[in-house]
Length: 323
Image (tube, rainbow, N blue to C red; front, side, top):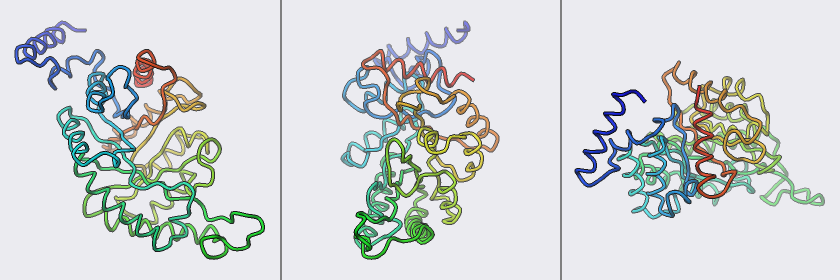
């Protein structure tokens, strides 16, 4: 550490103690042993539970103390409005970005590709609720998993249980586009963006409609709205299609958000086959070239238990961020 940085850190700590609070926002900045990460990696609740305790607010503060500048919470909609507001204030105080939460997800019904009145009402209602939640936490992105493919559920059935023969792929895609356009009509005035997440069939989510990055790209181009973009989950796309950096480049203009997780195992970078330092550097360089800034949600588990495992996650991101 350079001498001037050491002196600055000491002065900040002294001032904080004098005011009775060692971990003020400015002291946190000095407390980061290695500074903030280059990219906005976003931990999630329970990732640092052994080190920070059960309280989500304390977990967010722990993440900030270790250089993370974003937070992701898929289950945010299950919290009370008061807790959502508390999370939002904490993030604002710490100058952290809010990542995605789940706006709508369905894995086993063709709610987008073969909608019915009930599923349509549910989806559009979720979009309105999403705006309310987002305003409490200053969120800009929320995840949508647009249901399953339309399929026959038994060999002896010639008719789909949703009211007719299985729809051809083109009709399913057209229905999904129509539903997404109805969603963005609600979201656009609020400045909110849903990000569509392609998921792999091989290890986790067999039967979902959205699998491929080019498929998500085509949907977003057809919807043609700043409120409908791609969530490029690097773990899922490594399993589904590989060829990560070329596919990121081809989808670049329609990507709104990334998620990470190594494969196999879906743990922190360095535990599998993905060269995360190279992938993260590419995202960093390309985003700086066109003035964009991405959150990378850490949607994976810890490879080791306890505090040692949590430190291993931090160290893994330090190593992957070292470019």
